[in-house]
Length: 323
Ligand SMILES: [Zn+2]
View (spheres, rainbow, N blue to C red):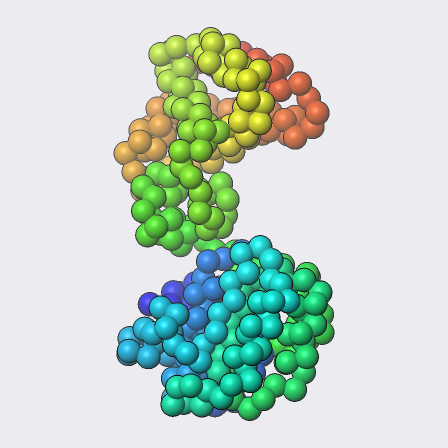
């Protein structure tokens, strides 16, 4: 239920929504802003349900009407999910609907536009015209991850609710719901800090995970990291430089995440990851973290990557277990 998720994760916004609906004085233009957060788009649909349901409270999310809205089968709720770009044609089509009278019994129409900041100038101006003097019973709900890129004359007409960056547990759940296994769900949530559909068979990602494992193995003297770099990783740099660089970036981030988790000493992880943590804890975690931060900083400059990773392998291979 979105209601519970909002109450749990965005207390202030939730309370403000409750107040707005209790008052019966619902603004006709709403903007859900703040950093990328999957909850925003869900909240937009939830608000559309709440507006249509119209009982001085937030939507029940259970009745047939709420379910039809969620499934996109409700005639008076129109959705534009621009997928990167909102064009004039999209808005024209929307406005054609806008001029028709409401088809369902409640006499209201709700227009939901995701990522309003991706509207090109023509599309944005058409939207602006419609919201300057909105018709009674018409509501506009916008979402944006980049509020500064929203046409200011649109934003200034909206009640703005600014969401926070979602917490890791919430994101991990989101990934898991979309059938990522728990380990990938966790790593992706930590890597991206947002929900972003991602191919876990992506070559750079798979390699980075393998590197993570190899690093921990090599620390436990199951092999030399340097030899692994030389035999398997560097040859890739010649063939597919992009994959190689990307896998290095993922790898450095993953190692830093792993080390942080090892230092925090939480127990709550799935098997594969928990096992890596257990092994790595035998070493000086702070020293390792420093090494990785240093390499990561240098990797962001124009430093020769091959030299950096030689240095990394050398430092790690000679690291002794803590007494
Ligand atoms: Zn309902």
